Image (tube, rainbow, N blue to C red; front, side, top):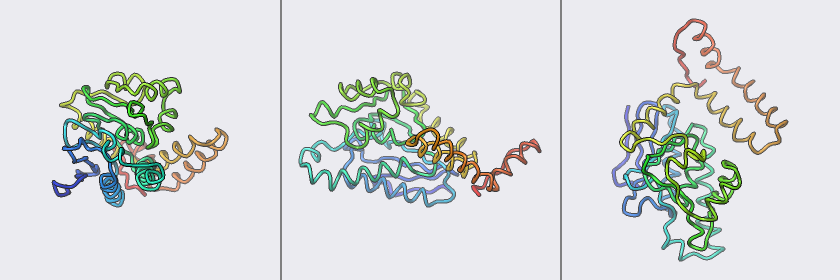
Length: 266
């Protein structure tokens, strides 16, 4: 059954089958981030995580102009060090870490500007599609700042260090085609086809074994911060747990019986 949220919410939620969609819905500010927006994102994520019918989550903008255009500059200009650290900094770190650690696969459909905090949010997602006329970047250096929502750390873990430094030191946005070449996004898609492509990918992911996807995501995310020898041990533990699932035996049985597998997440 399809579900949705009120049209005036900061983040719109729509559920289509096994796919939940979060649409950022503050067109007047290009979906810029402040505490109310971040808390709305967190609440939407909590709702979709708690819905057992939802296996994949898509994040996108409700307006064609922006995915998330960054922080609210007027709000940031009013801040001072300790206040920023204790208030906004703690909230953005918590929400982004929750998105990054979400047990369900996340798909970003970048439909417009993804700057500053918007690109930092993008770095927390699993698979990324981008409209061919969209732009992403970390322009904080032009304001006398630098990425503080995890960007300075996540970007250099996802790109060669020299590429990460160039993007952050210059602060210039990159095109969808450049983002694909760098490895920041998976695919550049014509704007008119973006929503359909993201949903098609999400439904395809939703057909995979959800428990195995959860364990695989954990193995990759946790293992990335471990020495290889420890990460390999963690991988062995995760795959051993998966062998206790009904889905693992259903998948093997379906292959042998030459029929589609019916995964239940158990």
